[in-house]
Amino acid sequence: MIRLVTLGEFPSDVLEHVARRLHAAYGMGCEIEGDAELPDSALADDQESYQAPKLLEEIDDDTQLYADDKIVYLTTAPLTAPEGPMGKGPMMGFPQFGGGRAVVTSHGLGGKGELPLDIGLAKRAAHHVGHLWDLHHCYDPRCAMHPEWSPGFTQYPEVALCLFDREKSERKIKLGQT
Amino acid sequence: MANKGSEIQIGDGSLHIGDRVVYPNQGICRITGVEVKQIAGRDWEVVTLSREEDGATVMVPRAKVMGIGLRKVASVAAIDDMFDQLAAPGDDPQLDWKVRHRENADRMTGGGLQGTLDVLKGLHALSRVRPLPQKERELYDSARHLLVGEIAAAMNLPLHVAEDNLDYALWPPPGMKRKGRPLQPATLAPPGSSVVARAPARAGDDDLDDDLGFEEGDEADVEGDGGSKAARAADQEESEVADPTDTKDLVRQRSMRVTAEEEEPEALDELAADALAATHEDEAEEPGPKVRAAPGTTLPQPARRGAGTTPPKAPPAVPAPRAAEAGPESGTGLARTIAAKALDAAANVLAPAKAASRPAAAKSKPAAPKKAAKPAAKAKPAAARKPAAKKPAVKPAAKKPAKKSAGKAKR
Image (cartoon, rainbow over all chains, first blue to last red; front, side, top):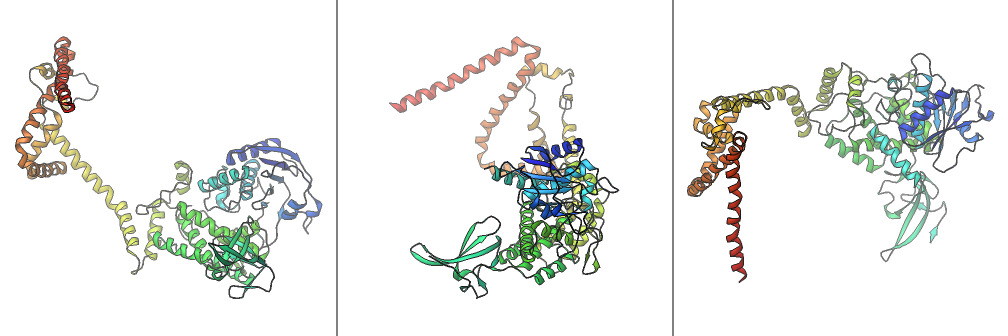
């Protein structure tokens, strides 16, 4: 089961859209579980954005009921992550790769050249839920696992997985259920 | 029996218990100990490893540790060099699938960082030209998985950050720099060409028909107007890859593609025109309007009314002998020539058995009235039913001797 938890104000129709898209993309149930508080300890040095890995570790939430539950936290706040060898890049979400939790931000959506809030949030959420099932980035611009900053991600608003990623996620889901 | 302690040296002495190592094709493992296992009545000293991804235990004979390519996790400097290579403009992809498959398999079996990087970069470059076949898509994913794991292990980063950084180099976001040098932002088209997302499928690439699970209509708006340009760009890329020492497959691949693009449609049209002309010539020689009657039409067919007295000719049997008699010189159609040659060959084969073929021809003649009986039944139902009723009476008569002979055989 995919469980959505909001860490900020989101219109209900947007949340329903996200839940429907996730359900359609992965073929499993998706529920809106309610709200939670952003942990202040995860605030970055700039006091505006949140350190995503720390946020996921320190969030006080007991939404997870089963071992294979995937919890997606939705926030409007900008996120940061540790810098890698390529420096600082765009940050639209952070998953515990192969784990159970991911945080997705709506920051920047609805702006010029960006997807609308509901569509963009659904696609970002689907992307990071895919990482929770060990899916890697995909070269196909129509796939939801395509890198989020690439033009293909915004050019194809539909939330769909390519055949390879769909089959891989299905295998992982079945493995989790057994 | 397990010996644990960092003083135990493994392989060439560079590995110790507790080290994080890279197992080729498996990923990051940690050496947990050296044990003696009795296998097939013999004691084997094995190095036990625990795969970090899922905790699976791997046992390797101590003598084969270096042979299988077990190595330490790459250093930060090596990872940094790797990113330099990733961010550098890519080479042309290897288009000969046999060469590509052999090279990639060797690289992955070797388990080196450079080999895995080459596999990823090569397949990434190929994916910008066309979708990867299933096996290579799996290889691409596997290489990516290994690299992400090693980057994360070497630089102590979360896996997601490692993967994002890998793709910052492969698909640079706007404003991304590498050591002060701005990188060209990722586009839908491959850099330096007008191809949008992917080139259209080309003939000669026998593994192109992989379906990514999307509708055909989706591809139309992806390709846009870059179809012919994409093919030309792919041509150019392929011609650059092909050098005089290239294998025959690439040459064959190119020739097949050129044939498909330029010659094949014309050749097909000629063949179709010949076949059509031959068909019409044969039909023109056929007397009677019934052959050309459109299906479903109810044209008056006086000839069929007299079918009970004069059996009509069987339509397929008539044109072939005529074509054979006329010979290939008189007829221009390709079908006529082929049929004549086939009949000549058949006549040569059957020449000694002429006597046997006569009864067969005699048997075929009564078959025509049987077919003609059905249209006649419409005009004169009562008259047509009578011969049809007589026919079944023949079959029991033919069966009776068989039964008798069977009875005799029993006796």
